[in-house]
Length: 222
Image (cartoon, rainbow, N blue to C red; front, top):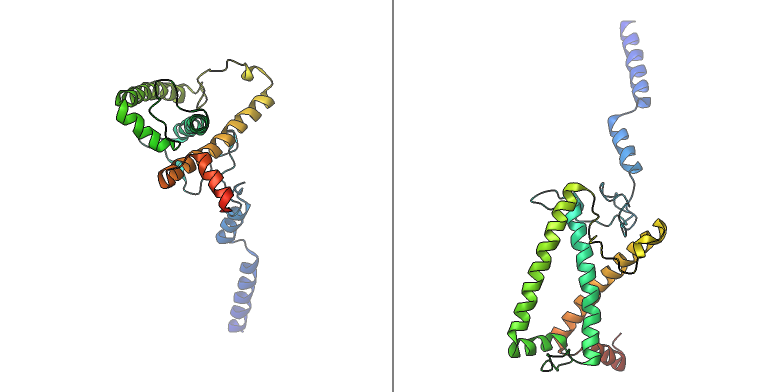
């Protein structure tokens, strides 16, 4: 009789445990319910990329947004991205402008259509121009570094905001300004790819960007 009661008790306990929630199932449901990245739907959205920044679609497969060491954090990374976006857009336009219209006054010796080769022509004739440019870059980086440090500490400055708005774009409605910010980031990211392509093609083929394009169209290389 005792053995029969023990067997029935064990069976009831096993049946009850089948309906009891387990910690593993809880963790699994939490992981499934986690918000997915907009750009990488097979990955969870990075915790700090909540969509509040223009152009943020949760793309961070390397987890760079979680870095918070030696002065590098999400604010610093955003400042760097905005800066490189703007520099890349200027670089793309500048390379094409010089190739189409010729060198700027004082740089007549840089006649090569390939701007990478034209750079070395300028270096050979007037290296002081390059040195002056590097000094100006260091000064700009110093000012930018001070603005980034103070803005991160005070929280009153958005990354990349230097108050430069001569056309008054920031004085309109908030939705319109947010749209312009998103467009700047999108075009800047595209420009970084374009500038890298112009540089790599120039170093490889020693032709200008438009020359490379015309050659590809003529040879049906696409």
